[in-house]
Image 1 (cartoon, rainbow, N blue to C red):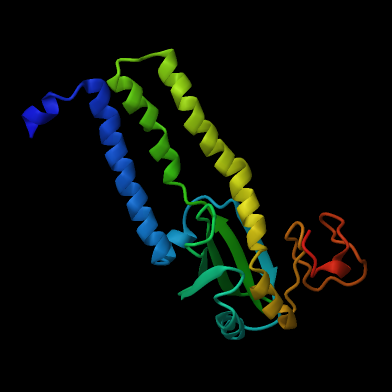
Image 2: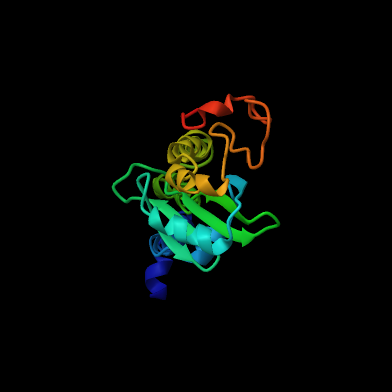
Amino acid sequence: MTSFLSRIPTDLLVPLILIVVFEMALWFEAAAYYRFAGWYYRNGPAILRERWQTTADAAQIRQAVRVVLDADNLIGRESVDGFNFRQRTASVNSWTRIALRIEEAEHGAALHYEVRPFYSIAPLIIPIPWMIFGASGITGGRIMFSAAAPVFLIFAIYKWIMPWDVARIGRLRSVRRALARYGLRVCECCGYDLFGLTGGLRCPECGRDIAKDLDVC
């Protein structure tokens, strides 16, 4: 094994090792994503975080959410502290992971809606040009130039594709509508919690006409 590794050029060996490590991380994350691992859906950087208030207790909220678990092209599974959601495999999406945590609050159960990215693909892409061009003896500026395309792709995913995907999910629209009888009311545009709002026809946060809160912004 040592003699085999010694025959691999150094400029190829390092990125090859990185590729293997990131591939392992990718498969590990994919397994956690598909198995609805609660720790995985709760942890990591959130690209969207909102809090919604209701008038019901946690048990009532759980029961109502169970009825509409698989809705809006999403698949859900109950966890210790709430529910986890992901999009269906056949759906074109950015593999966002959605957590809906439930906790008791002063006026009733509060829901914490959190969306996190599937992020192993980012470090996986970066070393590929290094491995390809390093093996050809091409170094310096050309390697940096070759890395620009995947870096731009990663930027595009996080800047445009993922926000589009999150908007398409509609803040668990079916779940929110099922909980409307428990006082849950959220602005469709900005996600502002409209619980207990009296007077006024516009969202205090974005100014949208809240009388049309069944419409998509």
